[in-house]
Image 1 (cartoon, rainbow over the protein chains, first blue to last red):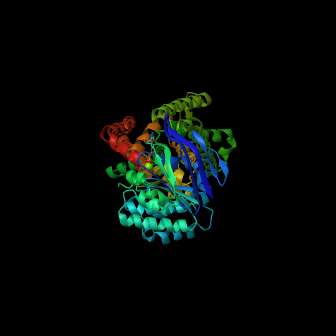
Image 2: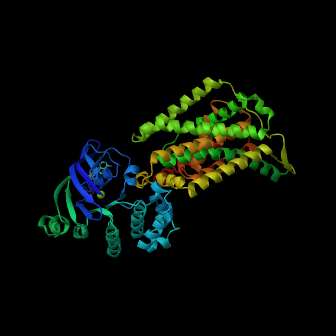
Length: 235
Length: 301
Ligand SMILES: Nc1ncnc2c1ncn2[C@@H]1O[C@H](COP(=O)(O)OP(=O)(O)O)[C@@H](O)[C@H]1O
Ligand SMILES: [Mg+2]
């Protein structure tokens, strides 16, 4: 599956935040979207997920244009987001969070197997399955947020700053799992402020600055780019 | 009657009315939990339930000849279905278009809907009190000087069953879990593929149906109903919801029961003329002493 966004304009009220963004995400590949705080990365993901309306622009799935559809329909077409700040359902148990990830396909008999699959990816979640999600550590919550999204059987996973506020060791673990997920054929659109890993892993990457894509290219090539090194890698 | 017996008797009376408050309070708390709206129309929805029950009763006079349990079941079904639907329709036409509007706009709309419903009730059933049929009132279980009428037993058990059913729904079914998830974080729920509009409709359906059931019980208990009863009882049930922490489902149940018992004891030991004052006194004290506490809780949920 290929997700294509063209000339996306999105705003809050009168303020325009995205000023015409074009990008493409394919299944089985990692695509990175990097940019400073406030550039509009989360806004992009929320628009793709159907939470924020397009002021202009279009979205295509495998060449077919999709217009004004509800967030649940986006999810059922295989585009699932892991939002910034994890946003697990804190008062619900780990297991319930995972079950809710599969809300759109409750009748599916494979839900139980998929929960087991998530537990294999993140064994700690299996130990904590009866615990309320709010009692988990930040890293565990991020794992749960990813696991919950996987329960929807995404073809394309939108990840909004999964490493934010986590210890390096935990980040490494999570990135390992992302590579596994990618190897299984899921496409990943990875938003990161912490750009190094994202650019290393990304087949293609976009640099977003105040609502515009200012640079794009193969991840490793962007990593060499002096402009990028200065702005996003602190060099 | 001994002191203890008087105390227990008032407690039982209070428990009965408390269960009714609890049922109504659930509607306030569920709706608040999910869209942070104090649904002022809920009191009117509750009393509409009593009128629906009465309508079923008087539409089929032959029913009175039948087994009264059957009649009652029919009245409850009509009240719950009718009010459930009413709640869903109100949300759909009055609140949903305002979902993104300032909170105050919704609140004012809710008050407006409450007035409209009150007036519609008055137009249909008239401004004077209507008498409501009595059920199981004359058979009672007596233990010493204590008297529990079958009607009281019926109200207590039926509401208990409904609350247990609600608890089961909310904790064990996927839709119930989606309801809790949506209350906690609506955007995250949408990102998980939950159609929150449907979930909100279900929330109104259940809350209003429980309120409708409470309406029939209220009619059974007091045997007269009036179009403006929804207002007073609504405020009491709202107090119960605030008492339990608005947005908190078990809290609403406990708050209702606690308020009913306080009222029962107050009526027994002070004067029944004062019983309405308790609810308001509690509400004022709560709002004065823990306004931020209550609001803080509601933001998190
Ligand atoms: N709900 C909102 N209302 C108004 N402005 C917002 C809202 N959310 C984000 N913004 C603004 O949109 C811009 C982009 O925000 P965001 O997409 O969150 O950036 P990023 O994820 O890249 O840090 C910022 O200037 C931010 O202030
Ligand atoms: Mg962001």
